[in-house]
Amino acid sequence: MTPVAVAAVETSSIAQGMVTADAMVKQAEVDVLEATVLSPGRYWILIGGEVATVRAAHRRGVEIAGDTLLDQLFIPQLHAGVLPALRGVVPASDDDSVGVLETLTAASAIVAADAAAKAAGIVLRDLRLANGIGGKGVVVLSGSLPDVQAAVDGGRADAQKRGMLARAARAHRLMLFARVIGTVVCTEKVPAWRGQRLLLVEATDPAGIPAGGRPFTAIDLVSAAQGQLVFVVRGREAAVALANPENPADAAIVGLIDDVQRYKSGTGR
Image 1: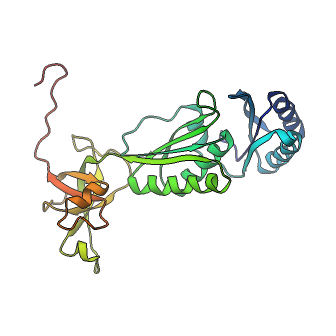
Image 2: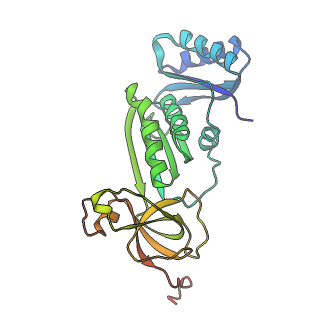
């Protein structure tokens, strides 16, 4: 069962961290989700439970940690996707964009993951804390390009404010299969889009089966029909396909797919 609230204390001293963890669990009735040594020479305790008890234990932990306190967090309503990502049990999926947030502490990575998941409809893929990565935290998330952009921006904000952001980045598949599922009508467009048709598409696998993720809008350059399987290019490469490359497009339909043949492995045919 996902706890309602979580809190954590991260210390620069292993010995003081253990004392802090002991004080926190004695202060209030909470569940210990993690209590472990982190590299390089840090200690980390993550607790969960009801808001009031977790808040009380968190306050006690910050007090006991004293000048060994590196970072801390208290989240009264944790997003349901954070703990599965931390435990490494998120199923694989074929999303078209990936975002990465790199923070300087474990606590700031948890906060960034929670904020990112609440900012947009993405999936938290992985959440790694400290060990083997120089004491840093790394959040990996995926989804549609607009959602990943919004999630990375949301997750980055708190870490930047606290001076705990190491790096934030986004990557996406530049070319993908998609199916036309609707039209988008705009009475007014920017000059670079005038005369261009906008279609609503959803990403698919090569067989045309929906790959998941939110539908998105693409400029139609090949007169695609409703229900047709098409080839879409994403990112700034989409703008290059238009007559005026200085335009705000980030998705364009550049091909109509008639057939897809996959060679058998090792045969070349």
